[in-house]
Length: 233
Image (cartoon, rainbow, N blue to C red):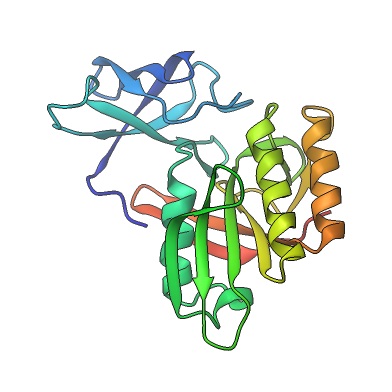
C-alpha cells in the first residue's frame, strides 16, 4: 500500500484526543492533524516523537493533515492509522501473498455475516470452504520485541472472535489476522492485563477452531507492505 501523496516530517506536540493531534513541521509551522486511531496508542503519542503527516486538499475535510507514521530514534517505524491494515491485507490477499489463504481467487470486502456484523474479507473458491477473515491492527510494544494486542479494552474485538467461532461451527474457515504495524517486533501475544475479556475470548476462539495468523509489515515514507509471518505466543 503506497501513500497517495508524499509525507511531511515533523515533531509531535500532543495528541489532543482520539482523533486530533498537533505537530510542528520541519518548516517550523504548527499544524493540527487528524489522528486516525481511537485506541490508547501507548508509547506512540509522546510529545517530541518524530511523526510523518499526509497533506490533503479535500474541501470536505476539516483538517488538511493526517497523521500516518512514527519514526523512532533507533530507525524503526510504526504506523498509527487503523485504516491501513485492511488496505494492506486486501492487497496481499488479491496478490496471493498470504500462503495460508492464497488458494482463494475471489476476495470480497465488508460482507454482512453473523449478527449485525460485517466481516473484513470473505474468500471463496469452488471446492473449498468459505474463509471469513477479520483483520486487527497491532502497534503496542512494551517489552523487548513482543507485540501485544489490544492496547485498550475492545468489546467489539471480542465479539468478532465469537462471530468467527460461529462460522467455524457452521463448517466454514475463520481467520483472525493480526497485522503488526511496527518494524521492531518478532512475535505477538495478547495483552491480558489491559483487556482480560479479549484474552479469554482469544483462547475460546482458538480452541473452537478459529485460525490465528500474524504478519509484520515493512514501513517507510512511501507506504506499508505486508511482510513476514510472526508466531503468536
